[in-house]
Amino acid sequence: MGSGKSTLALQIHHNLSVRGLRGVLCTQLDRKSGQVSSQLGVSAEAIDVVEGTDLFTLAEALQADEALDYMVCDEAQFYEPEQIEQLARVVDELDADVYAFGLLTDFRGRLFPGTQRLLELADRSTEVDVEARCWCGERATHNARMVDGEQVYDGELKVVDDPNVEPAVTYELRCRLHWHTGESAPGRGSHPTGRGSAGENGAP
View 1 (cartoon, rainbow, N blue to C red):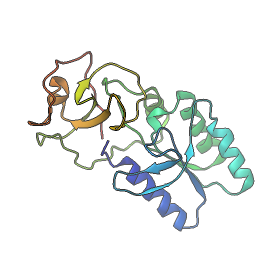
View 2 (view 1 turned 90 degrees about the vertical axis):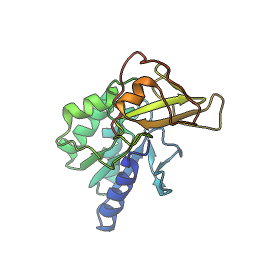
View 3 (view 1 turned 180 degrees about the vertical axis):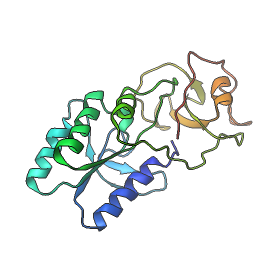
View 4 (view 1 turned 120 degrees about the vertical axis):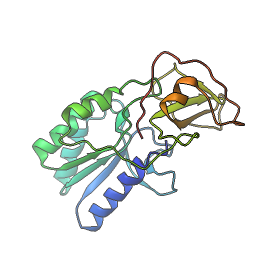
């Protein structure tokens, strides 16, 4: 999404590991399976979190094998609420730090279920501010889902961007106004499609 969260997740994992701390990267539906990857081109191997993965049991097994000091969890918006609760148990019962990174809201403007539970349980939440901008120059606050170049407001919740399939799915950072109107930058093909069913706040 260009929000910088995966870059920060990779940086934190690197900084902790070079200090000699032991931990793991976790992700779900990253553009590169089995990795946390940044749009800057940096990536690292990661544990794929899927439906049914018990993150507390995983952490227990890792701790039994060797010390577990931390977990860095990217794409946490896609985790199930139960998995967020498991991460809270990792902190409270296993005394390991958990750093979770994810978007606030989906392309429809609603909190992801995983994000909602994370906000309810987190010891601290911080917005990653990388000064993301809409094509018009205003601060970008929404993630627009584009299908064959047209913004959509309905569809499956978990869809990874892939411009090489049909229909091509991509995402664009937009200000609230241009998320509502569905208007792309002049010359990019999309045109106003109406306000849709809800306003998204896919905060970068």
